Length: 539
Image (cartoon, rainbow, N blue to C red; front, side):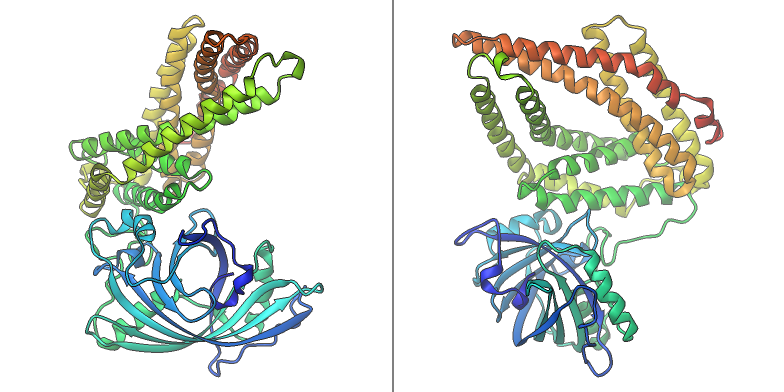
């Protein structure tokens, strides 16, 4: 829980002192009844008591760019006084979790803290952050408790007065109900509370946040059109979503915009070193580039190829961090699986030194990339491309006509790569060919995923089958990369006068794993190459 609903001694975060604190909040917002009264929640399943925590006055100023780029991405940045956690609050949507946002807090100061400014840099770029809206809220809090007296959720009735800043002077007022889940509680409890609220005539708010509602209602009060999401390039979030029509171009662009939004959404998570964030950001980067390549009949490659090259650069830079992370997990698990009698020498210690040194270097490299002018220029070029897409003639044709042909072509390309690899004898040349086949499978998979909204089950099956090929070949490539690292560790151990036996043992196991994946490939490929998979696409 956040805001005044969280007692000062129950808050937690990743920072101390002046460092930002981070936590996740899971909450839902509702439009209050006309009289602003809160229905009785004592009968909600699991609730033993409802404790009143009184009314707190909150005063928050929200910051954004002039064209409201943060609001367009469903990001809020505010400076708030009043309550137990006054200070700067940055709220970021969690791409993989509904009703969930990550809140990063910093101590009260006059200017936007540098740590928070860095987390929104991908959205803001070089545009200044200025005060946009002021919200003054009278918050009346009730805490829902279980039989042990522990919190289940906080329910607040918020009476809000919004004022648009910057000279327009538009105002708006409303009352809303906010339900925030207590830490560690099952999100399903929110469904039980919502059921009770619905019976009392209370419905979910259409606005995703107080800021979004304030922007819309203060704009209406002054007669100006809300410009959320109308920045240099339309984006997702409050104002950039577009439902595709039936053309190939619309469907491909919808997929590309979704991946661009994912790229931006994962940027702050990578900067905070959140689990799996580098992987997710890298996947979005690769999906963008693969879509440019696969759908070149829809988008002019003279425009997309240069952007694709920059996406390739970004994916490679992020790959340093991600690949080291994956390899560390793999080698650690391998060492942990060796019987103690076969652990000869300081194996654990040498692996830890290698892992820490590599992680530090990779993390520094990733941070440098995200802070670079080249990265921001790439984001600008990507926005510009999506705002004014270089559509070719095929883009105007029905998606159901164009997209199947693209998938069949990608399948043919993958077939050539796989058959070439299977024709080679085991060894280094075959390893390289299998890696190339893996990249082709990944590109075909992403092309299939992009086509699912238009083609449905045939595209979904296509993507699933080629993903199985990609996963198997990924396991093979991981074993190849692990062998190279194990050999290096063995050489280092030998040079230091240590036994290299354990490293050699692990090398042999990885060699066996790679050989096993090669034996499995024909069967997995047979399923992906079946005629009915292509026939469902019209091939």
